[in-house]
Amino acid sequence: MADNAVLCLVVIVDLVLVVVQVLEDTVNRRNEQLQTRLSFRSFAVKDVALFLPIRTPEGKHTYLAFNERRPHRYLSDDTVRSLRYRGRYPDYVLGRILMIEKHHASQEFNPYHLRLQTKFYILTVERVFGRSASDGHSSAGDAE
Image (tube, rainbow, N blue to C red; front, side):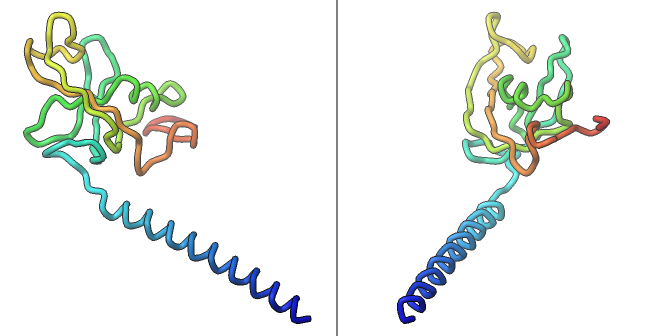
């Protein structure tokens, strides 16, 4: 009988440890969310940025970062392609910056039709605060 009581206590302690771990994970996720701020005056890896669609002469799906005096921050083509769902692209992208590539517009490389020698940046992000296409995401106006 004493062995059963010890076994029950061990099981209860194990369950309490699992619950504590789950609560710690939840608190850590919540703290990370509370520390997330939208960047629009400066952009660095791990910052969260808002990207809005713009029109290009050839009709390419392009997104520009919402900014104040920090123009020419574009969402990478790979990121844009990953967001397409049911033939549509989202109305906006809120993403955590994973990589920033610095470029200068040249005769050879000028995907955004900027004045030659204009400095621009291509940002790769992971989507935050939203569902991915595989989770059933649809953009506004997408009939389901």
